[in-house]
Amino acid sequence: MNAQQAQLADKIAAIVGDNIILQSDLEVGFLQEQSRQTDKVLSPDIKCRILEKLLVEKLFIAQAMLDSVVVPELEIESELERRVKYFISLFGSREKLESYYGKSILELKDEFRDDVKNQLLSDKMRTKVFSGLKVSPQEVKNYFNAIPKDSIPFFNSEIELAQIIMYPKVNAEQKKKSREKLMKIKKEIDEGADFSLQAILYSDDPGSASDGGNLGYIERGELVPDFEAAAYKLNEGQISEIVETPFGFHIIKSDEKRGDRLKLRHILIKPKLMNSDVTLVQERMDSILILLRNKDLSLREAVAKFSEDETSKSTGGLMINPKTGTPYFEKADIEGNLIFTIDQMKVGEYSNVLTFNQQDRSGENKTGFRIVYLKSETAAHRASIDKDFPKIQAAAKVEKQQKEMENWINLHKGNTYIKIEKEFDNCPELQNWKNNDSTK
Image 1 (cartoon, rainbow, N blue to C red):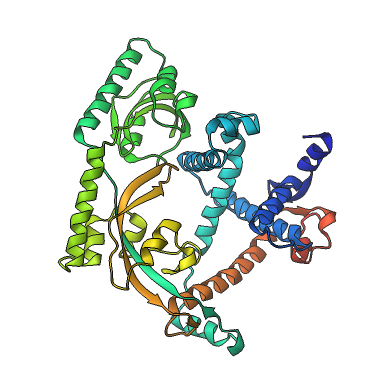
Image 2: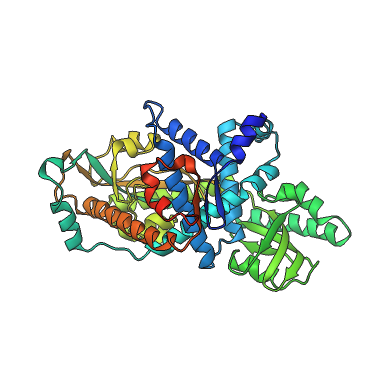
């Protein structure tokens, strides 16, 4: 980076409370928008809109701090790990990523940490503000009736899908081997081996192994219960016995204890999944499919008894389109491999047992199996309140959220220190913010 670029990166565009927005933040936002719309020429006022979006985000962060909203350290670490894995997948390897940035993974995570924490704070504050917002059936009808007749949307053909998902489980023999391996590691530590070095050599936790098993500071409620219960029993410098959690087997070291805040290290040994474990769950899914197709088991019963995907389980197996928040998918929204299966199915049919891959909350890929059910398929049509109530309800809710957002912003920005640099005086989107500029 040359001196001119460094000066640009360090230039402040706006301040909201204790949070600053740099010119470089706008440049990053601009490049992201450009990558999303490669076939379009971006409008000249795009940076004004990007700055407005950043101002809203910083206002949520400022209010989150006032309301003492907390983001658990484990949540930050999980999101950092997810992002790092995503970037590794883009570059092709860990080494290529580190070479491109000239920094180690740990240094990159440290660099991203504040941004990730602030993003999670903003998200939690949004959830807190809008979690109770609902639209009544009458509000949905009023919203639809207010749409001019010549502006009523035209919906493409759409489908509803449901699914049952199961994942292989490690067997008792592999669990025993993992426990015995960790017992041996602990014995070596008890006899004088360095805990951090053992973590680097043997731990299966990719987020902490290279840093000697360091988990940083944690507070109550941030970790899974069994791990946390064992950690809080430790005195400073003490090492736990072996602890089993859904992630595997751990030994934990307490580096520091400050009331309810602990600084911890751990070594994780994950039991290995065997081919026989995979075959076992696949055969079980084959049996469930036979029961479903013979109508000896209903979809709802199968989801309740067997499905291990908590998101779709809570909707009776229905898959939710992340783009719309509804159970309706255009075929273009369906992942590549699945659409080939759906194209061969009729409404009311079940797919064969399919291999399924999904990222868990830690960013790790899990492989399992699923059965997909084609619940409905609609032809392309003009929207109507009877046929499309859920989608119209979702649109009405978005409009109500936007109005609530405007009200919330107007209520809180007057009580928050805001300064916007003069170069943005001509941005129409920012006039209302400029009127509340606390420096005036």
